Amino acid sequence: MTKIYLPRRAILAAAPALIAAPYIARAQTGKPEKPKVVLAVGGKSALYYLSLTIAERKGFFKDAGLDVEINDFQGGSKSLEALMGGSADVTAGAYEHQPIKGFVLMGRGMQIAIGLRKEVAAKVKGPADIKGLKFGVSAPGSSTHMLLLSWAAKGGLKTSDVVAIGVGAGATVVAAIEKGQVDGVSQTDPALTMLQDKGMIEVKVDTRTTKGNQEVFGGAFPAACLYTQPGFLTKTPNTAQALATAIVRADEWLQTASPADVAKTVPEGYLLGDRAIYEKSFAGVRETISPDGLMPAGAQENCLKFLVDADPKLAADKDKIKLAETWTNEFAQRAKKHA
Image (cartoon, rainbow, N blue to C red; front, side):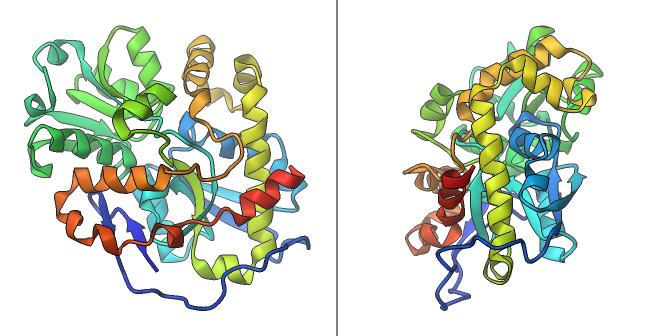
């Protein structure tokens, strides 16, 4: 099947079909075949993965009959490695990372922004001016890194023209700027909003709003989702359905929850010591959270174009890629009926 993956840079590669058998049974209503699930994620405290945290904290996984063990890594590329290495059953990660099949969406907008320290930003008129600068990303090979590479490419730069340093997510991002360890960051909220409110960075690229995604990608962009190996979906469809149902419940809850309720629900450490900033950050990205877990029309195509723009070498393989084989809406559609 078509593979979407990100080893150390943004690459979308076509590969021969791996499975020819019919995909998933149309109705899954039984108990989970595998009630204990190990889930890998990279940077769980970020608002990018808020639906996952809500499903966990509100008991939605438990209600679906699951005991979910969540292992948090520095970035999305690391959580992908856990899945491919067999230490995780499912990954919560960016759609463009996954070399297998995504089945429930958490974000319909990228929710990442690139900001430069104020003293550096004054010298940067466009992406061509970032050559040689150091940027803090969650981890090399992550979506935060990919957005940086895409912006650099628009300025005619090569991947080697900018330096990406893994700084994780959350408080470590703020510290990297405060200590002058990096010239800028490509990161998620709430860290970005906190740095903006402190007047420490100037945002140059912003995909935390619907408008921002329209400007950068031309419309909706598939961001955080659950994805897994094909065998997990075919062998344990009830388990996959339970996961999807819990995430859709979280997606729906977040559409109407007040910022204060969200702040009360997440772990205290996620607030970075400033509840008001966290609430402001959530209010700013709420519209990019999926309302139903479904892949929006045109979003996959926007992702593919973005990846090709970031790495022109992919252009030759673009027509070989079968986007339909990288995603299924079946589980989210059933979840929506029962959430």
